[in-house]
Length: 219
Image (cartoon, rainbow, N blue to C red):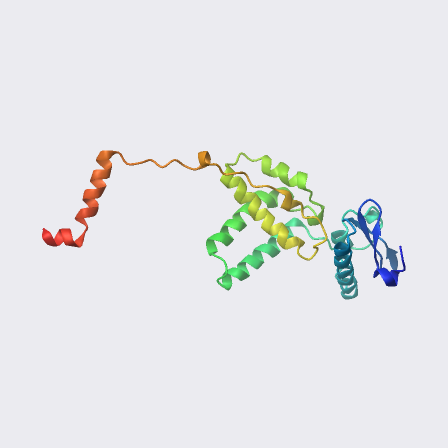
């Protein structure tokens, strides 16, 4: 495996995983994540480890958030700092409000995002730990609603945006919301245009002509 100094505290582990090596609360931990140990992934993992060490020094590191699948997580003592989905939603909506203040987002868009997160997703997963929510849970919620394709796409689009926001600090973690696929909007799904009949078309033409200044002047 090589020395810790040579590997930077990050090594390739069996079964396509990457293992970290660091000290937290006077205890040495070697958690791993499911990620092919390519050169690029190992380089990003070393960068992530430096961020972990920096968070440990500041006292802001959350083991539960960084390694939610760690098999010995139940042995960790102390108060959990893992964020709930509701907290992530609140942070994302606050970011949207800040963009609104900068005139970088429309008020109607922010209102729509809030309505979808508060009305659909918060009641279902708001009290769950954000990094423990899996894809099967999200798709089961979405499939449980009797939505049109457009409503379905809007609901999962907002969720993807909120989850992308929450996962930006943890780029090595798998974001389950990214696997949600939008429904295909076909031509048959679009509302059909109801054309004017000949009588209606002539009536509209006459009304339009009557509003023309040149026609009114001739009268």
